[in-house]
Amino acid sequence: MSSAVAEPEVPGLPELEGHFTATIEHADRIEPRDWMPDGYRKTLVRQIAQHAHSEIIGMQPEGNWIGRAPSLRRKAILLAKVQDEAGHGLYLYSATETLGVSRDELTEMLISGKQKYSSIFNYPTLSYTDVGTIGWLVDGAAICNQVPLCRTSFGPYGRAMIRICKEESFHQRQGYELLMTMMRGTDEQRAMVQESVNRFWWPALMMFGPPDEDSSNTEQSMAWGIKTHTNDELRQRFVDMSVPQAKALGVTLPDPDLVWNEERGQHDFGQPDWDEFWAVVKGNGPCNAQRIAHRKQAWDEGAWVREAATAFATAAGEEKSA
Amino acid sequence: MSDTIRAEWPLYEVFVRGKRGLNHVHVGSLHASDDHLALRHARDVYTRRNEGVSIWVVRSTDISASSPDEKDPLFAPSGDKVYRHPTFYDIPDNVPHM
Image (cartoon, rainbow over all chains, first blue to last red; front, side):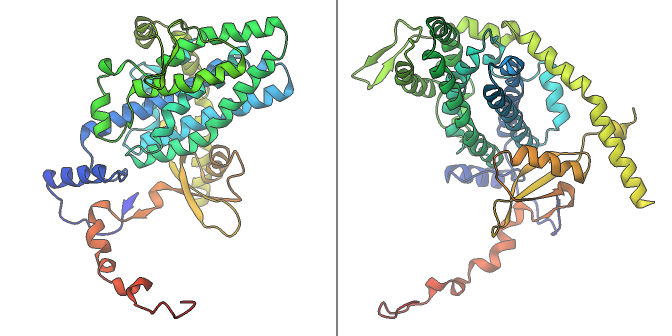
């Protein structure tokens, strides 16, 4: 965008900071062309890009089962879901670009490992049941994370989240319905559901990030209105939501310490294996290398399409101006 | 490959009319190689669930915008004209339909 009106005198730094802080304090939104501190911009680029990358990489574990879905109905649902993940990635990439990063740079940073994506997508989908469990637990955890982000202080991020949350509800419900269908099936199918839930429960809890005392970015992010809840608050909320859902489904959650605490009015629960979490974040999860290699392959093999479209547009433009 | 072909596709802003009778509203942006593909991509990215009956796409570089820094001077002329609002006028409660 260009500015059609004459630029006014440039305000000083204290004035700019004051205006920024006042906007945050009023719970008003910061928009892309507003002045913002470098740290705020950097934190947002890191967080929104990581979120975008997660949506894009998140297409892989479930995409794995599109060709093997058990019915046309399930296949259509799964296709729609994976297409949504692509769409969510695009909304978020657009939001990141308003902060002055290019799409190509973002793709490069994902492929080179300079930027991360959610550790959950480094776990494999071993059976079709995992499609249901991912919908229920992984998308359920994502919703817990994302609903508060609809009110985040950066306008484009909040607007992307509103759009995503509307669509995410379908993701969770289709997963839960899939699992319910299997629970009404044979003993073998019920065992498949339980096994899948056992594998995904702890990685789902890790999706909220490290415990508050180890989360270096939380305090500043909350002061800036980027985050509105801590990791542990959201994890607690997710556990409390999931327990009755597990009961209705007829599965157990694989945590011996999970118990209702009357005094707190919340569940007590055990901690995930944080050593495993950090190992996966650092690139040593079961599927890290495979996920990135697949993304790189798709990017490289799509190059000729991008180039052909650009060449076509250039030729058409030249013809018009000739 | 030349630099022009390597270059990123231009950015488009997308506006969607939710249903007949409503304005087109800005919904987001996307990259596309030309106007035609921008419309196609906009359909796939922004209207997967009947969100619209009409789409506009426009290159971001073709939009002229007021600068956020000059918000105050630009909009100041309307700030002190309270008489432009209906609530400025005291009308007795017993006057109907006003």
